[in-house]
Image (cartoon, rainbow, N blue to C red; front, side, top):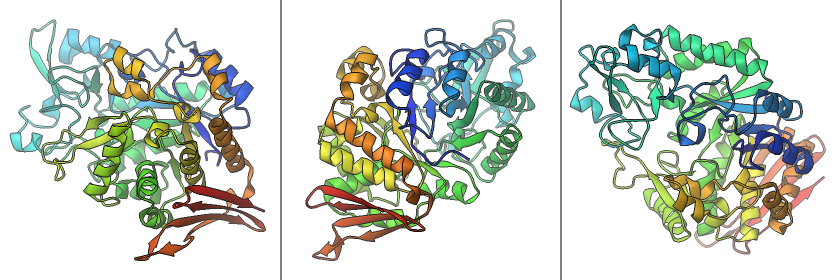
Length: 484
């Protein structure tokens, strides 16, 4: 079971430029801060999506370091790594062999030719219209096989263009893919990794006539298999799924760890409107076996994560405020989505900017996160109260670059002098060390004004005679913590 303490999430090169410097920064400045470990975003050789199009999982990108660096970090901090169970790079040796030899390739069964989904290999228009899309029109790519000069149409969920993709979907139903997944698990275990995040796992279920996203019961059958394999190696799993919040509740009810992708937007709604009612209701019913977050390498979740938590108008309000503060959007492209008139999928902005660079509001938001049931995960930009990186946005063809600034060691040390950063570290240390956070949680309304709208919130943790409580006063924009 993961430690019930705060975890860092960072790229291998974002805190000092390399894994060795990351380890030094962690040991020098954060040894008592990230006792929950460090999630190192994909450090493997990759052809795109900043590591999420891996060529393989058995090497570390040389410019970052090597596996000895990962093992060394793992001696002091529990290491979490990603496995993109849905896809691999089109530049990988596995797929390049398929491009050369087609179905005679030893790796052919790793990939999804469309006859695996539709017997004649021809998807029906009505089926395509139901697919939850991450790029325009359809998720397919046509591949010219070198040896036969035949065209193979395969499944590629992600990528900026209709006709090609850097990420080639894997057929998780094939034995070849299952063997591949297990080999990666075994390698990670040998390299001192404690937990694996299953990235994009919601996309692995392709089935004609469905959204091809988190198709039930197929997804549970795959999760059951993959968990059994991880259990053999004593590896923890963290499925990553952006979906209606009820999906994550289903997973936590079955004992899986999940992300709380509702909390970031819900806290913004609360602080923007000074109305705590929806946050209070949500906190009363949220699970404990979750990882909480406010920001990450992707954007702040909106649709479908906030559906039926906030109204469309409430979600639009969050988007509008963030856009005024320098954000951009990732959009949902599914043709059949009932809320297609509002297609905001994620908001790309630093959380510090989303709160108007207001130190007090920022620390209030972090305090709420740290008191919410679950294991807090803090993104490296958020750790340093980073601002929107417009230079990176100009230089890179990537909207999410606005919240992916790479810090030199000197920049880290400079950020640590800021009161807002020191305030956050103080909150994290309290969360890590107070025994009450291993006990029972409850939430109360602090007080109310007209129309029975709660304008305050009290979050309480108790274990035996140990108690720690957070009081949030929205109208006064202040918070206080009491502990015994």
